[in-house]
Image (cartoon, rainbow, N blue to C red):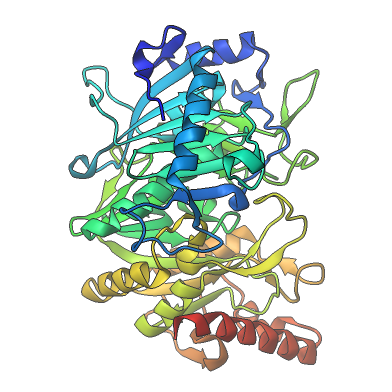
Length: 506
């Protein structure tokens, strides 16, 4: 394997400003300016993550600590060295964009990152998603992790040991992440999250796939959930301050954001329902696969013809009242978000610590169209700890840390269905966002503490008899179905899927 000092690369464009990176992208025909000032780009063949092409190098450091399998596929160290040499040589002969950033808003946990990209807009993405050094700060001399991102380099599976032309490979010993064959910028973001999910819990800090905000009383709320369940939307609350929209750490001192930006799904984005995100989409933001009107240059957020997984990346400072730096106290309430395609989970339910462990390990939701390549219709899925694709260690390792923290700090946990009610996908309808916001507000205020709850043993949860701002008739899902027998059938089917999935932890 050959290495290179990327800051001395003769064709390197180093730590350019957002405006300079926008100009560079436009000059190279790699995007267009939308009417709102954002840079609109297309990612070609790959419009979502490619989980089947993600690997971790198997070596002395990872051999006994990584949960090897279909999620964490092992990669041979010699194959990695050879592929790294190829990617380095590929980038060495081209203009590259180099970005020094860091992760972890708590200065006691700062994690330096160097991102070397073939495309200017990928460097802009990294500049907006990761934390940025101040004008008076000097980047660390040696990065804790270096990302080499070369979309135009296509792997040869037979020779390189990959599964396709696309690859995302983490090498913790060499402190290098290789990304090639894909233009989807989300791979850059999630590769660092995966790295921190391996490194930080080893030191006793719980990494979490969740958003977080804080209220006027310094009350912190966490929102766990997979893509499309509402983490970004629900945490961007005009009445609360945003700590972060996707990735956090819970340490002995409290909660802090891993990132310095947001990566929001923007399919069917509405100024009325999501005003903070709408306002954040301006110059400096990156729009991925959003259709732009060729004449007016106005983004059409309702158009999913390129993908349902349209995305917007922007610095967290673009959100009004964001917490800078993104650090808060211990959480006062935790929400698990699930977009239930079966339509049988209640809009809100309360979980005791044992039930919270069950649902944390289950991580149920529906994979929505476009989140991953090949997903066209919603599919029921279980993702350990609401983030299985990014967890190198065994799920129980994270779950035990989570259980310890919620018990130590006596944090109430609620399961919120942001999916369908009155029937499954195609029959019922998705619960309205105003109702979900009313539920979240009631839980944060503690309005449900004195409300009677009815247990539903088959799902290991309890549902309230009432909730301020929400019609009582929708709180019990069985009452929203016109065909009661159909509800029972679907509920039993989903309950069996829960129990079948949980057997692997027994």
